[in-house]
Amino acid sequence: MMALILDILSWTLLMAGSLLLIVGGVGLIRFPDFYSRVQAAGLTDTLCSIFILLGLLLQADNVPLAAKILFTLLFLLFTGPTAAHALAKTAHHDELEPWKADAGGASSKQ
Amino acid sequence: MTRYTISLTLVLSVIWLLLSGMWTHPVILPLGVVSVALTVWLTFRLDMLDREGDPLHLVLPSLRYWPWLLGQIVRANLQVAGRILGRRGGLHPGLATVRSSQKSDLGRAIFANSITLTPGTVTIRVRDGEILYYALTKDVVKDLDEGEMDRRVTRLEDQL
Image (tube, rainbow over all chains, first blue to last red; front, side, top):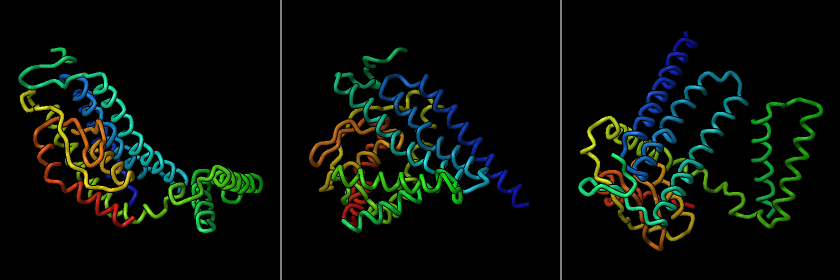
C-alpha cells in the first residue's frame, strides 16, 4: 500500500516535471529574443529539475543513491543561475538591446 | 583552525560515505580515509582552511531562507509558464534596477543569485547597493521593488 502511494507521488512529480520541460522548450521557440529565451530555459533549470529529481528520489531504494540525487539537485540549483547570469551579462556587455513590446528588438525574429 | 580542521574532516567523511556507499569494504574504506586526509591537508596548504573555505555557519540560516525562496521559484515558474502558453501581448520585457541593502559580497551574491534563480528575472550586473536585472514582465519588477527578497536576504546576512 505504502509502495503504491510512493509510486503515484513519484509519477505525479515526474509527469509534472516533464510537462514543465515541454513548456520550457515551447517557450524557447515562442519567446521573441535572447533574454526572454534565457527565462524560458530557466523553467527547465529550476522547478522542472526539482520535480524530476524529487520524483526519482522517491524511487531510490538506498541511501547513497538518494544522496547522489540530492547532490545533483543542489549542484543544479547552484550552477543554473551562474550559467543564466553569464549569458545575460555577456549579451548586455555586447550591447544587445532587449526586445520591446512596442518597438521590437535586435535579436527578435518574428 | 582546529575547529575548521575537525568540521571539514567530518563533512568530507560524510560526503565520501554517502557518495561511495562502501561503508564496510576493507580496501575502499581506508582509501577513503586517505583521500579525506589528503584533501584536508591540501586545503590547509592552500591556506583555505578558514571561515570561507568551510562555510558550515551558512547551513542553519539558509534553511530558513530556502523554503521561502522555493515558494517564490514555484510561483515564478507558474507565471512564466503562463506567459509561454498565453498570447505574446502579456510580455513587457526590459531592464530594471533594484536596491540591494546587503553589506557583504556574500549577501549581495545570495541576493543576485536568488533573482536569477526565480524564472522571469536574471541578474546582469551587481554594483554597490544596486543590481541591474532583466525582467520578463512588469509584475516581477513591481514584486522586486517591494523589496521583500532584499529584506529577507539582509536578515539572512545578519544571522551569518
